[in-house]
Image 1 (tube, rainbow, N blue to C red):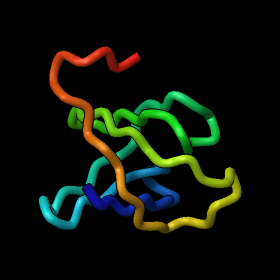
Image 2 (image 1 turned 135 degrees about the vertical axis):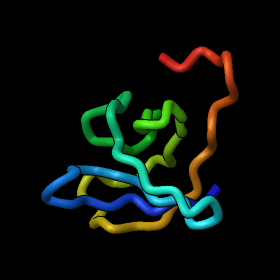
Image 3 (image 1 turned 90 degrees about the vertical axis):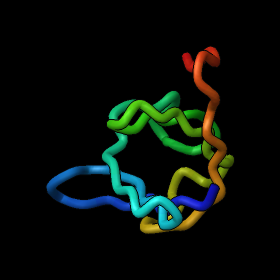
Length: 74
């Protein structure tokens, strides 16, 4: 799914999913540099992000894959 990753002074990192009109903060990530691993957002979804350079400017729209319910997310 296409998501936008944004950074705001109030919320820190968050994502926006246009097709669902959903904006949620990122609460946990596999890697400190964000890219190439999973992220968990406030509603519980876990998304796999593509590998990108650690200095990729934000906001950016990327293709992310949502992990299924019951999958090993850690």
